[in-house]
Length: 463
Image (tube, rainbow, N blue to C red; front, side):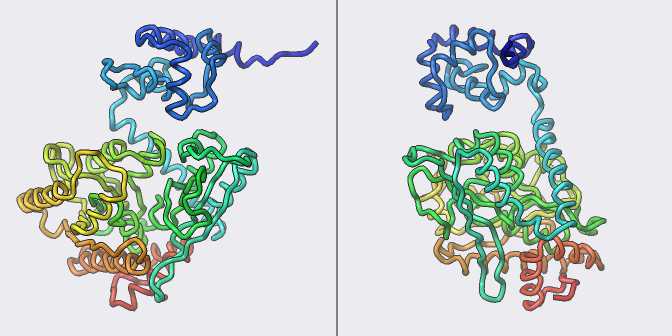
């Protein structure tokens, strides 16, 4: 006799899925949303394979994928007041997947711990083989072959001035494996494929459209990047530098290349790297082709409230005139073990970012410049002294890749020289730099040579 699958029955018996069914029906009634309306709303949010039959099954006790829960919350504004607001964790809390109303600290701590475990695992791989640095792109190609739903192209990006060529990233183009492509395909659609999502997260791939790459704005082709500079990494140094436990890099926009400056600085110091962009993506995922600022900001607050030893952190986002500064904890107090670097964009760079980047409608260039003046004055009264350095970032134009990387290198040199001149670095951390050379030869090698050639005394290994 043929045995029928037990998964739907098991789900119906599961208390969590009974709660899902109850909440779905209750909120559909509360919002006066019929099955056809729910199908339309879910499809608009990116859940493309929804149909009336699925809705009927869900309402009668069949569970969905866990990754689909946020779509129901948004479609029915669960936990909201009917004004467009909603609680993104509503179903997960009600079903007992996460504790109800977890604190922001618990949420970010979980995301960070997941990253830290992944970094330990990949650190072991790197110690076993330098080829592990390039496993990310191979893993995404393998996932596409496994799923049979996607086609992938890879472009290794080597950039920088002639005297410091760096393998900065692998640029990935992903398109559906069909003849006629839906032009509305976004990175979020790729992300919703569990096989691809796992491969993308292991590689720390992010939505990004920088060129050169195989496709140029082709409809239905999504652009990603595996950053070799700017991705999270573990520390190689055993003890903290005497002048600081952690460094906090901050800028208003990603066009300052703040993540790259932070990453290369960490590579010199032997510190690890944590970015609010990756922490936010770890917990919240992506929306369309973006990692939202409202998701990065609580990650930054957490990092300032709980500075991570032997780590550099990086964040970009607007300056708040109401809350704490980007250099203080939630109580607006300065931590004496944190060194701060503010990369301050000039007006031309802010204007170029404003013209091309997705942003909130209330943001203006003049407002961002006023925010800079406000923060400059507030910092002056905080008494940070040598624990904060403000460095200008100029508009090098997007097409001037060599000039932009030269500015990144010069900024790293300024930060490291400041630390050296103020006796904030250890006398001997050559072992940490040798480990960086082993783990990241195509980054640390050219970087150390360039810094040494430009008079940097903090490079302690032969180049």
